[in-house]
Length: 82
Image (cartoon, rainbow, N blue to C red; front, side, top):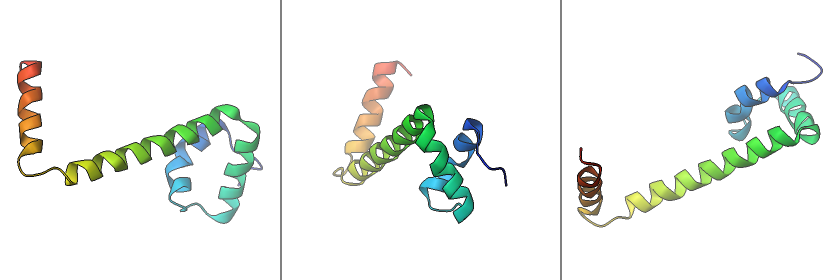
């Protein structure tokens, strides 16, 4: 493996990194890159925030009573004119 990872590799590996699925040496290179690249560190933070937000949305949808979800879908369809 290379002695460093370019930004493109960080983007391609980010999901595996977040799921702790990278080999130890690759994870170390990933983290080393983040120490020197503010852009990739920001991207990682944004991905974490997105995952957290989606998780909250899925939980909220599961907690909706009865036909609330269907009513919302119908309301948005009418609003969009679909």
